[in-house]
Length: 165
Image (cartoon, rainbow, N blue to C red; front, side):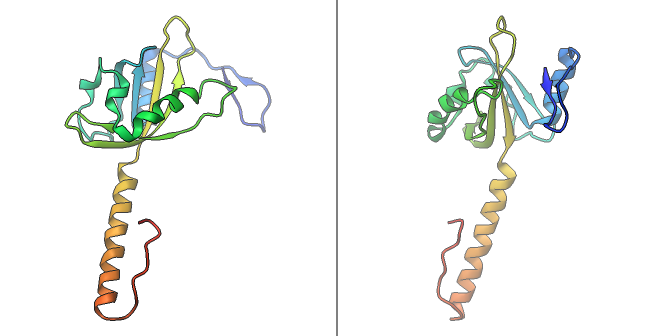
């Protein structure tokens, strides 16, 4: 059952949606969705057509913890603890660096949602791609450093620390 914004009262009754529609919605609304079982094994990978850093199907059958870099391993338990499907918990997006099949870092913001069907015991890990934001930050720092070097070369100013460095 979905709830409307506070300006409208009462629950919004949503018809049961076929799994193909749910899959299409997930693929359209999010960059990456991982379907996990209760033990954290990846059962399925749903990638938005625009999010194609690489083929992530080799992740199927892998334990999720083995797919995150060392800096992100500690965030996994916090991700599970802040399950967005639990009305008593404040859901939080977590920055994770997933490791692609070629061990390349895939930065994402992730949110956990348990499937409300106890017999299934599934979690959806909904992810937003942070690659474009990371690239923009990298380009900003390069431009800032180039500007700083040019100013120093001409004796126009002393070095100033970038707010992003």
